[in-house]
Image 1 (cartoon, helix red, strand yellow):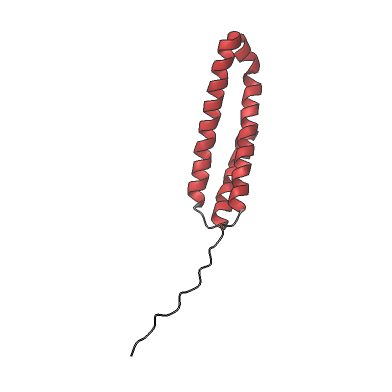
Image 2 (image 1 turned 90 degrees about the vertical axis):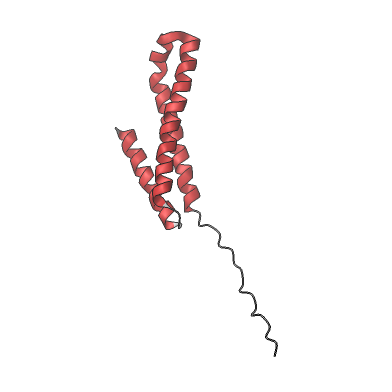
Length: 105
């Protein structure tokens, strides 16, 4: 339960950081949420299959908690990196206004 609360707080931080830097907060938060779900399921399934093939069902039972904790920690670190990226203000390119066109009389 604590993990879900921490991820939700981080998702709010993603939303807030994106809005403050002029990006779409909803899209960044939604993308981060979907990415974290896909990561958790994908890595969990992949490691589960590897553990099943290497050591059988007993190894999956013994190592399911550590695998879940490691994937959760990696997920939080990736979300933190997204927040760091969003806190960078995009560079505004300065382009001076062109001179007015010449007038011929």
